[in-house]
Image (cartoon, rainbow, N blue to C red; front, side, top):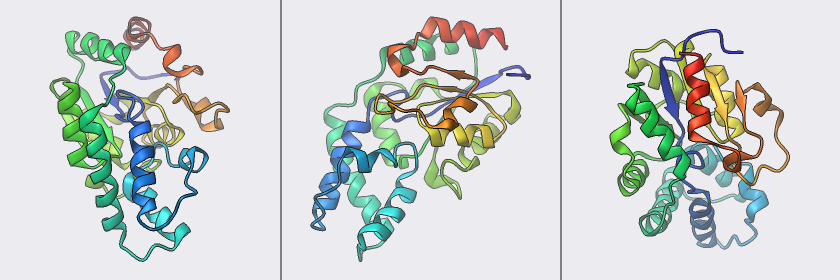
Length: 228
């Protein structure tokens, strides 16, 4: 239960504002195919949804014994992803409506994403979402990615708002964990692939179990206003 007033809202990007996960999956497969790895499927991808590119590539490097550096893998993955993202990165319509409602009521907004700064800039620019955010942070700009709280704590610091007055909007279990580790409230909107929800989702202050199918900008905005 939320005990403090909500004075700012922090959004995740991938799977929350934009439906980018299919593009990331294709980019991962292309990158791994260069090393002769062809068994990377949706089930393998699922465990990485919501964590930063660096953390994912660290695990991929260990798992597949890839000789190249983590930095090389991240760069290669981003190259393939950007090719796909420039062509098509759909924005969730109701999410954009929520941004508009929050902006109209002058809530300070931040974006905290596990993607690289270059990817964030291109996706936000193409989706025409950059104007809504006072603060934009990549996981590459903090010491630890989600589920560590670092990125959300840094967003709160840059917004000059105490963490207990911040609300996080997330799609992944790691994002929910990071938000709660930061002492923040959280709305969880599980990505469609999450058929069986991890117990971490139950820690969210508002959980929409059916994901975007259940999400309403107006209803969510009214819920936020209840705690403002």
